[in-house]
Length: 402
Image (cartoon, rainbow, N blue to C red; front, side, top):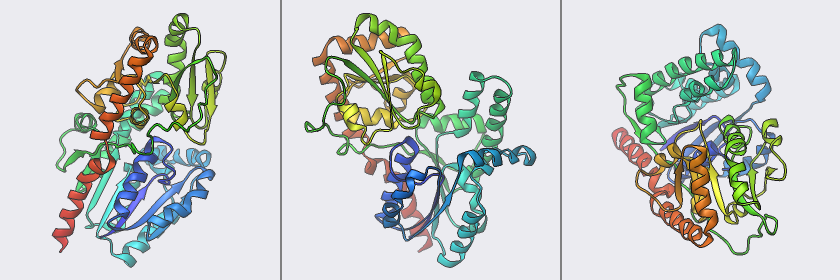
């Protein structure tokens, strides 16, 4: 089939949550179909990766986005009564390319990654569309509001309402929409009300071969320390909140019991609040060329996310690296409802201290738990298995057109 694939951020390299999913989706589609990609680059470092993306696609159009300028332009949404996320990702050149490609190529279907990209589908009325919302993005803004003062709290509540309305309209115009978990599907139905179009779960996967432990990888940690690690984009508010809370309310109690314990915060673009955490008990790495050594050689991995939902790639990657993970209970529930050794839920600071204390006090048991975690994701979270649901819908569309 000839597919138009619209993504809000260049789907390579797969070095942060949304790009991991959008890249594997692109690779999966390109294996069987002719893909025409329209996307944005919002990080100049991603320019070097364009050749890899072009190898997978029949055609590529890239719009360059300056986050600072886009934030200013997004305020036009206040005048137009729309979600600010829409003008943030609005580009006349990308729209012109979609308009032209729709006439020139004659697409069999459209795959949209992130609801904001559905605003480009005006010239494709009647073309089947599959929409990957990933998460209920509007709910993120609702969750942010209580943690911020006015006027941001007001702005975030407004964004929640306006973006939810757009998400609902997007779903109602699609042949089928996807979210990363059954819990996210239920949340959308709860917030948006009755929906007439199908919405299904399309879970994240993990490349277990890529994250497999390798004895030749050098240990990045200092001799004699007991390392915990948190990985993720460190300019993302839920990650910032997670590490600040962990350092303030959880780490001191653990250090009192394990004096050599040190938390390593590994990820790109650490915000000022994250940089301020650095000290004897905390190391902030910034961008690293390869996250796998930091995962593989950690005593345990933590994911104390209070403001994030859905299947967290950081958790799956840690499990694939055969490390035990202590994570927020909602993140664990998104991955599995049945207990899995090596994936430990926690809620309160006391929970985190107790669960991590058990792992850190018994290295052999922690190693066994890590191996069990890897075995679980190998069986349940391959990308091929997760994306099979997408194939079923595309095959049905192809048969219908034939």
